[in-house]
Image (cartoon, rainbow, N blue to C red; front, side):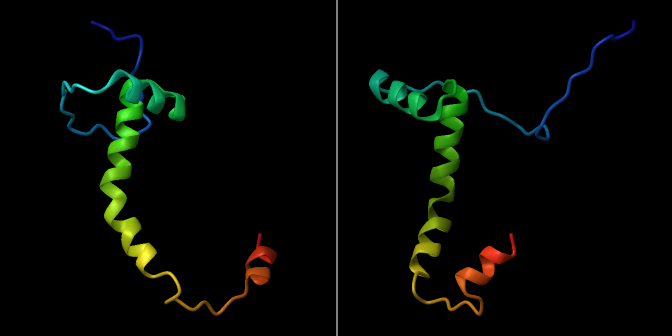
Length: 79
């Protein structure tokens, strides 16, 4: 048997779990409008943001505590 088409993925294949959830229709609609994507992509984006929340909080806690040796104008020149 010969396969005449291939299957390409942008991301490596990872283990996935199919899950059924009950969500308010209005919340899902607003989230989908915000992302401009389908249900799965919208839920994944939300889950990724929640998973990264701790890292974001740690970065916010550093506000005003980190001193840079370069000025903003120098960084802009590097573009």
